[in-house]
Image 1 (cartoon, helix red, strand yellow):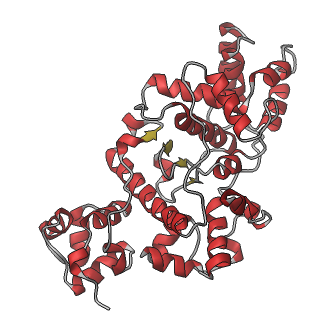
Image 2: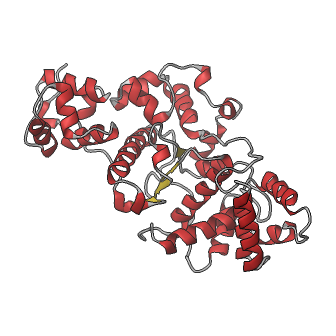
Image 3: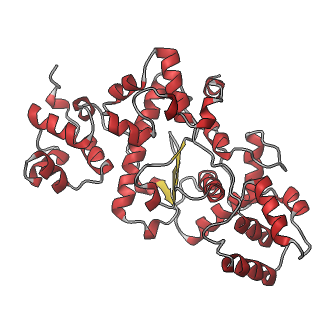
Length: 370
């Protein structure tokens, strides 16, 4: 059935192009038109013929149906937190925003189907007491005030904030989050301990910086403080931090294993809480650097895997009999786009599922609906 051309959505075309990292000229060359024609399409001055529509679909990885309908809930740079905004290229930020826009399309579709809740459960807090803000989150999420967080990714996703990595671009973005409906956190492919800290850092932006521009040294320092307070609560950390200078590194790595935080972050937290002075902090950090542990620490633990997207896809099948291919078709995504956005193949294969997801009950999703 031919699409109603009066409903061709120029905004969706721009999202699809940016998602692929293409310029207007790139797209024009791929489908054999002049780039002014692509400019006209994105400006809403022109509409594609059926032949050109199919060419656009093939070139960009979307079904023709994707380009029709209402504009998507586009992620905007001003509403997002980029860890290193000033040093992240505009083109890279734009592509990340397009990724987020498409992932939001997936989640909006899930909410339309009543599979996931309409709102997240991330409390908002004042910036003037960050330790209290971290305690508030632990209380709301029933984590206890003085125990390690076993799986921070699972905690944040069960609070309604998806965590993801974007294949092929995550390494160019230090970390990224977006407050809103839905909220998101996107991580880089770092070591497991540093990813956990980045995750807590981005959570700090969602808790502390609603409607506040981020990316400056002040808001970054506040998010770092929140991350330390959330992962290493003051009372328990103060009891456990080793005071004796002998065997300090073995003791710090034991703390890393228990709390799931890098040794570098543990040393910083001790200085932040006044457990060590500036002189000892400098000596420890210099030794850390001399050992080559600033960029790559030993004794890393198992990496946490995002779980909510696979669980939602399971729920689509359980509740509606929809396979991944059905969900992709409903969204107007071709298989390669589905894989890029969700990290999973369209074909239902057990190998697609992260090891941790295979043993987790779907109650993680269903309980959110109660």
